[in-house]
Length: 490
Ligand code: NAD
Image (cartoon, rainbow, N blue to C red; front, side, top):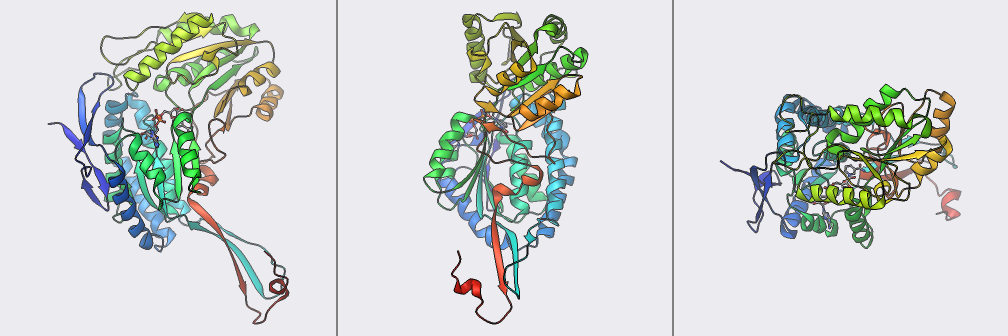
């Protein structure tokens, strides 16, 4: 029997008010998986109203108690990890081991943010007058709207909803239309963990549901992860209403390989970062910036390693590269491979579809790419790597920093001086040394510069910033009108 994924509003599973649905399909087998609620502005309004009501009580629950709900979420996620991971592979295609990693990030985040329930640190500082006390506290923002992509269907939402919830906010979540089943199962975990009705609401659907969430006057914060194109639209709309917005958008991440790099290590890291999750990680490596002395050896070793990758259905044992998420993604990859050929880059390997059914594409490498080619500047979001040769560390850093995005970068060198110069000069939000561009840990800030973000960060000590407002409190216990008030300071 075909399943139906429903909205979760005010603690109840329900179809879209209009009754509209959309279908989801397995990108590897193309079999139909489920119908899902196709929500519109009416459903969003119901969810926001439920969140607004629930916020009144949730913000008063002591933060350590809210943290305990998150610990219960972590335990349940551990129990349901396999079930969620398998569903994820079926819905969006990443191989099972990667899907498990996706769920594990949410588990890590739930423990980390559960602990925040007993920290949520503010501060005190000396004040200018006698018998007066000053402190700064974090307040929840209110009803927050989350809009997320399909490529990390559990991890990315968890980076948003766990800090939002522990801080005392109520949430309305609009996940990607590619992964409604995983989204519903994830929300069920929070319900089963004892989160009160209305504190977390799920509205399934596509762009219009996201637009309605952004435009709703009672939603004070929008936290968005997705493409730069959509993110900038969200930003522009939210700005007209004076909302706080956190954006995590596209990338064009690079690995720099210098002549003195450990070749074997570099090749392993490149293969995993470029072709893992079929190149559809936000931190995936899509550019290689290689010093000329190691160019030949690196290209040969990479071709050999890539030829051994097993492309196929992610639920099958031994498969390392799954399908692209949908037909549109496949067509985009095909388009960029054609662009690369027209621009005069050399197709070293790949460049074709793989398999008969499903949206599979062979791991692909273009060499002799110049920094100005479109395949070296634009996000392709597939298993296509563009190799730009350079002469020096300085040139490598300049090429890395010259694109419109700035999420993650990496350098392979055995020379500590070169490594530290790169750390100083690379202008991405995440920098790795002798490691691929993927694998961020939740206890550090996550996000990017330039076209990747708007200066906000997720996770780490910055996790609460998007979802809280600072409140400065002054307590005068002198019993008289002191000079600061007479001076009429701001
Ligand atoms: P997308 O922009 O197509 O969709 C993202 C979300 O926005 C979806 O939920 C979608 O339904 C919603 N949406 C679409 N139109 C909207 C509108 N007009 N108003 C409001 N919401 C709208 O992105 P995607 O294809 O789901 O994800 C892939 C992209 O996400 C890539 O560009 C990737 O780099 C990026 N990404 C970035 C990070 C990061 O942390 N920087 C992480 C993961 C993915």
